[in-house]
Amino acid sequence: MEDPAAAAEPGGATPWPEARRIARDAARPLSPVTRPLAETTGTVLAEPLAALSDLPSFDTSAMDGWAVSGPGPWLLSGELLAGQRPGAAPLPDGHAIRIATGAALPPGATAVLRSEDGRTEERGPAGWLHVADGCPKPEPGQDVRPRGQECRSGDHLLASGTPVTPALIGLAAAAGYDELTVTPRPRVDVLVLGDELLDDGPPRDGRVRDALGPLLTPWLRALGAGPDTTVRRLHDDPDLLHQAVGSSTADLIITTGGTAAGPVDFVHLVVHRLGARLLVDGVAVRPGHPMLLALLPAGRPLVGLPGNPLAAVTGVLTLAAPLLRALGGRPDPVPYAVPLAEPVAGHPVDTRLIPVAFDDASGAARPLRFRGPAMLRGLAAADAMAVIPPGGAEAGAAVDILDVGWGSAS
Ligand SMILES: Nc1nc2c(c(=O)[nH]1)N[C@H]1C(S)=C(S)[C@@H](COP(=O)(O)OP(=O)(O)OC[C@H]3O[C@@H](n4cnc5c(N)ncnc54)[C@H](O)[C@@H]3O)O[C@H]1N2
Ligand code: MOO
Image (tube, rainbow, N blue to C red; front, side):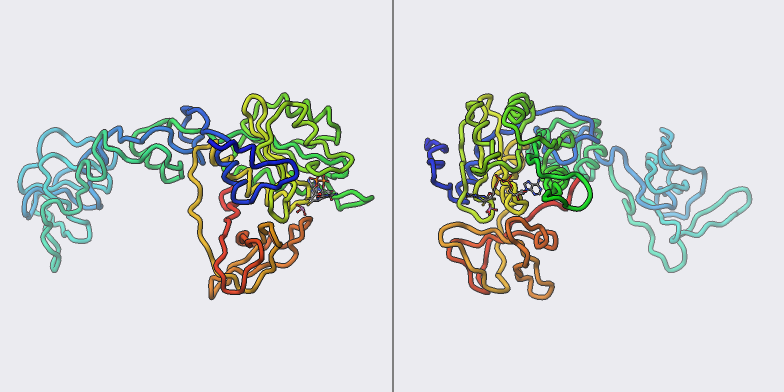
């Protein structure tokens, strides 16, 4: 097999599509865990989901009305509410019992007559039920949800690898599960580097606000990182960085800043000191060129994101998102392309990623301004990022779209 590290020749940036593939292949899904239903959102099933009971588990009334036996009219007696067990004695032919939606049908009942389709009459001490004028007689089985209509106990419901959505959790609960065996969401340690960063107030005295800590916390979770993901600020000190990376037990470590060759850019130094293997060292993409991916000796992946905020975003889409999918056992999104609303100049050899908004009428991708590597203004108004191949793209050309995926932050 080809050594992926060979793609990261010193001085040679990895082509952008290759970098994404290397990131996807750099990790295997985490070991399955069994968790209470409420803690499984955003994971994927690590084993198939089979029904633990018939659904519904008893013949059920689908409407408020009367459970009837035979063609009627019917002698009325009693009432059955949802959650009540009917008696074992069959409902005799010509009898009816008042019944609520969701209540178990008594044995012997042939159909349910909806309350709006029946007319009751007091005759002496007894009550009688008739089909209301103009309404059809209930067919056998009418407005009954028969036992096992949705599934039989043991039926295969969903395959291993299915993303655990709120609907899946609801189905699992309905089918009798209290917990699920899933591939967990990877835990990420984010280390934000830069002595120039401020945590509050406006930028001042030559310093800037940390934009990446606040951006990455919800975004990584939306991309599949665990709720126990942490973001920490570190001073520009190689020993501190060494200690923080070396002692991390996270499934994925992400650093921001310090990837270039400036006087306080220590990520390469620390990666080297820790004996990590660089799989990607620079990517032929703008912005985001200096991003890197290394495997620490225990096989733990480390993604180094550039400090410029839009460059860091490109690094997340290129390296961190595929790794989170690989660790979490989630499938890659199905790629799609959209025509560009206007031409975009290309880099001669590198791919460009630019923020775009989809035009309401045409659906075309409109490139947004304020997309310099240090800017987030364009991205904050964007629907997605468009992939501009080397050399650029004409108006109307279909370009690949990367969904940013922050809709489901939790
Ligand atoms: N001589 C060269 N200089 C630079 C090169 C190069 O190839 N040769 N590459 C440039 C490119 S491209 C990028 S991108 C940056 C990447 O630099 P670093 O990853 O080392 O990032 P820093 O130097 O730490 O910071 C760059 C820039 O971003 C600001 N920053 C950093 N962290 C944050 C944050 N959390 N929130 C907001 N802003 C942040 C930082 O203040 C700097 O302005 O290198 C170029 N230089
Ligand atoms: O990655 Mo840098 O310019 O491409 O910001």
